[in-house]
Image (cartoon, rainbow, N blue to C red; front, side, top):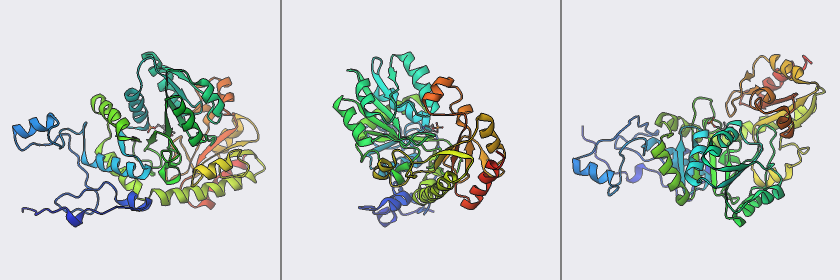
Length: 403
Ligand SMILES: *Cc1c(COP(=O)(O)O)cnc(C)c1O
């Protein structure tokens, strides 16, 4: 059977479309089969019509796919959808969130450059800078996330890049992204924001003045705890550099994972809304519990940066941390006496997860460094999933009642 092909009406016109429409449709280009769902291109290489065709594509004289480390149509659909949602000219997918951070630094920084990374970033991000980038002559300093004066004071003539996570894990600290972008730009540096906890459904760092957005797509973009991936987004000029590194070095995204992320993005905003609503209800409930000393959630008016969170985000996210009365043993007792919530350090899943930061994600820090980061032994982190909120509360009540 030969299929007549005219893409005409088969692809959607998305001129002026809103967030949810872009989340469902952006980046899809239908094949001659007229499939309604996004096609999954599981192929490592692509065929050419002739030797001359192959030569022209390799020389870059003719557009087209060559090899899936360079381009893959399913991965490209994911990249275009993320770019549309973040308001970026271009997005580049990576094999994991760490792969995205690696690609960003390897492509935009050189030996002799100085990078500022907020103190409270993801543990592996700190290790990547401290153990590896330093070996290649990149200087790194770690200002406290929210202290704008400390960022300005830490700048040097060779400062090239600022890297932050806002809100931070697990204490939901924020930085004023627009103000930090001004500080970076006045020094000739770029600002990169890890938007993992909010996703573009709740926060648009580029619109606030950041130059680059990074994601661990493993979390809310997938949303169902199935696979790893990452993405970097920003101007076409900067992303050209990132593309060059990824294609050459190889930590590119699997088309299968890109396909799962496309399905995740289609429900991103409604999921985030539900996650946020449950997290808010849980945080307010936790504040009422006699065994709980303090709750860290930007949606609470008791949070010191509640007003900034309202201004900068359209929701407060789904990570709620709290300190219980007692020490490490008390925190462990609460965790061990839950019966539904999953004991795992991942987040961004439909399933609610619970973890003890001091002995897991932050376990390698010295006790002094942990104290400086505000991670006490009695701190528990919950990433609120999509189960019935009453069941989540009942399970935590069971844990708390063991104290
Ligand atoms: C998980 C995470 C990462 C790393 O992503 P992987 O997909 O696990 O490589 C980076 N930043 C933040 C904020 C994360 O939560």
